[in-house]
Image 1 (tube, rainbow, N blue to C red):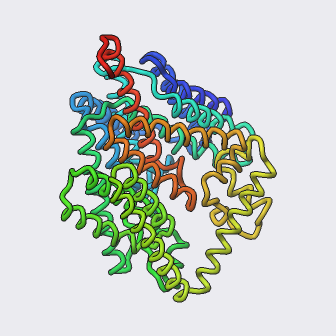
Image 2: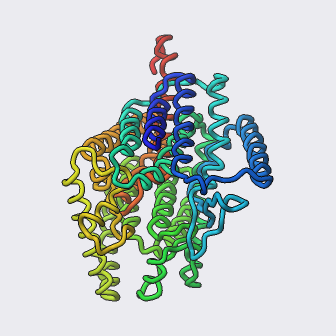
Image 3: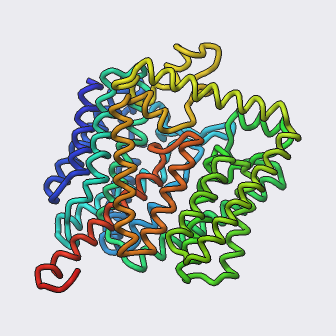
Length: 495
């Protein structure tokens, strides 16, 4: 049953991505939601299913009422859809689902966090409002760019179908239910919601403002040495090591650093476009940079250097490009100096980290070579690595920190092909945007580059809502540009 549910959801997700009309979109999303609900129900045992009670009925009534009100508000003011989703995207509350509890949830202890429940709650009315507007034809409907949608649909279908041969059905179902399938809905909303100047400004403002608040919180955590959320491993490292890594509102310092890096790069883009005073830009970069520094996230700092250089190459003049190249070279040298300083402060820790990273790469590559065609199944890489390569370590210590290797191990060369094709297609579409909507293209391109480079050095790409949201915005903007050119070409006016 679980296999059929995942396959149904995968077919629906692919159909939604490739939809050329509201009817096709409705059908695809209906199959996706039905398959996801069936999959979620199939993973729960009879004792774990919530029992009908007065409290459950009240919660359902309140939830449906809230959904109706929020949907009405977003239909009435669609400009709020994307900013609301962006605000909710990074939030994880310290709660976890518990069907046996009267309230259906419990609080997580020990610095833990739950799923992306604020995003899911915001995504439900956003999707309803998007479908309402699409079916009422209040916004033009067009097929999304094939360079993005076709490989994304293939990758999604393969990921869902992998539940048939996965070594870890529970892990595969978990990733599908809480990440991949909801993010198809997020992609759809982002792609089908029109972007105008106000929306773009609102998105940039919300991201930079929230990241600045989170950065200030991170600096305070460094001073007080008290974290909101953390893992057990991080708590041990902070207690024993010479450095205290902060997390802001996240549970992982690298995720905290990645979020701040996107905001810093966006500030650079806005400065290049002359839409922000240099003094304000310097203040924002200083605050965000201070938070990033205390994350001690090497992957975030590498992503920052690469993305700032890319933004300068996209938007700057010749002199600026030379200056940026020199500045990035200086930053690299400074980073090397900091790394040496940290190494001298904690030689054993650096050596252990280097050995651990090399071991992860080698072990994940071995799994990929042992299962070359279709891999071991979505989410199964840590368990298979533990079983086949390093039984002495827990699954958490065997999670690959390199996305291409993870894709190759879990979905084989077929999945790796879809992944690389998706990256190439995204580059093609971003280049189109740069030619016609320079600012939007540069902002989306730089943000996606941060996420991509970071994923080469640390875990998390397809399970990150910002990736799917940015891909959806890119696809939607390119689709509307193409639709806007058609009437002009028919009347003989140059597009």
